[in-house]
Amino acid sequence: MATIKKLLYSDKLAPYLFVLPFVLCLLIFFLYPMISTFIMSFQEVISLNNTRFIGTKNYERLFDVHFYNALKTNTIYTIFVILTAIPIPLLIAVMLNSKLSKGKMFFRTIIFIPALTSVIVAGVPFRLMFGELDTAFINSIMNNLGLSSQKWMMNYWTGMMLMVMVHLWRTAGVNMVYYLAGLQSLPEELYESAEIDGAGGIQKFFYITLPLLKPILIYTLTVSIFEGYRMFGESYVFWNESMPNDIGLTIVRYIYQQAFQRNDLGFGSAIGIVLLLIVLAINMVQLKYFGLFRKERD
Image 1 (cartoon, rainbow, N blue to C red):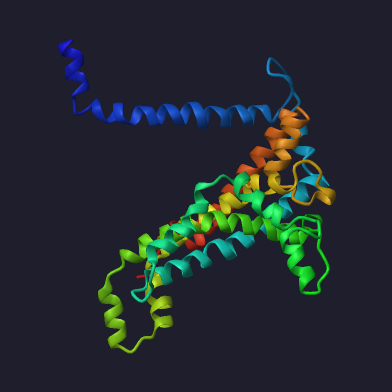
Image 2: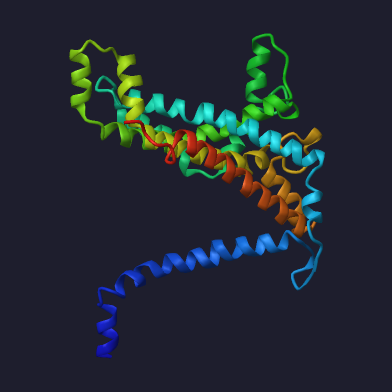
């Protein structure tokens, strides 16, 4: 007993005991499923206990119109997410961090509350507001303005707009908190020195605020790329089953269709591996040119 107690309080063993839960979670819930998915992508899965090795046939089936449509939708969606979910929360954070702003806690709370809701719950109000009927909220406003009603979810670009709006509404508060934390850690002496030199608000923003917030901007950019390509809920809330002309079809939605609705786990695994490689490649490129792997000039 004394020996066990001595081992538990040992400086050599204690760090490993603290790290052990994380390592077990990583092995059981991340590494093992990833390896299993990779192996399964080369198999025809008849049942969980009945599989047949078929080589690269699952990957050869990827080159169809549905996968290209899903990849196009995810790419366009990710671009819009980057263009909205990064600058808009940043501007909100700058305004709420200003000494002239009033009711800061109220507006911070209002903007952050949507982040506490799930995608489905957040998407339902948007689906009702942008319904196809003339009595839907947005269509009724358009009718009162003399405009015709729109079938928002039957058009590719209006459907894309709805998905981006839901994402922005949910994530603006989280990104705002990141930027606020960074802004509040910036030294005031830099801004005071800039004011003495005659710098205005815009100059201070571009030459002081943005460079010092670079680590947070890189983090939010990386997360936005990841969330853009793994998007599922924003699509599912607007198009439960039918998606004419693949409107709203994303890569994760395509995995869901093939693996769980059509019981083709091998093909679904191949799509998942390709998605992983796409996201990894894009993030490695952006980190090389904009982020952690880029060497700063002296």
